[in-house]
Image: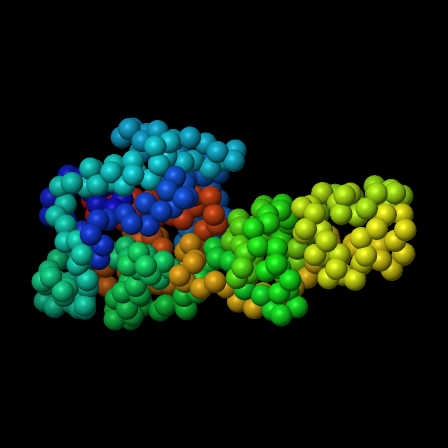
Length: 367
């Protein structure tokens, strides 16, 4: 949609979308509020090849994104100190993108069956006819949220033209649990501020305990960097347990966590809830595990619950200056279909807009 909007003077553009209206994923993002971008966007906010990501982000950055939408009447509000949301919600974003791509023809509820190249043209066969073009922009996203019509068609198109695909997997998604952590499920609905460590990555945010496992912003962001194996969680970030060592109050009263959460972890650690000063040295050692509780997720909630897809079209085969295939002239890839994935906070929308702008510039309509 952004590529088409930036080509608003181009009347020989066709948008093919499998949904009855474009922008289905925009409509549900951020609970319908649409977190468009972030005040600070750096390569550290993404998983992917930095040498590919940096030039794309630099040529159409967060300030240009904000300016583009604000100049077209989309008021933005900053929340959580850095995240920019559409003040009137996702409909304002979808409407603006539709309005500024109105000259483009559309084929909606249109499913692509096959794409090939014949006589210098791309031939796109759909269930509503066959279309031919000199240039083809693949902006089909990943495979997360299949209920919104997401498919692997972009990956299949890329593979047909001999592009490598980094195996897709769910990202920005909740974790399921090993039997040892099944007690988490009894805490469904409880949230707390935690710090999760994965390798050298540290994520501090809210965790939400759920029936299926754990979710919330801390887990979703951590899932982007998790491969397999152990993670470490600090349930008391910034809290010094020594301050309560001589207290006569119960642990469930003293610890800055929801009472039910504290009791569950005390039971799991084999500690009876009682006045802090009555704990043995061994119990204090076990209590310190609240600062470094280690567990290995069993897996994730899957693509049906994932915000985004990690993996996709390998960027080694794409020119970051134009988003065009290095092997097939006239074939472009933008957005989530590529092997570039950002954290929560507007980073994936920013990648979509930045890569769309690079593509539109290459197509000759953006200065």
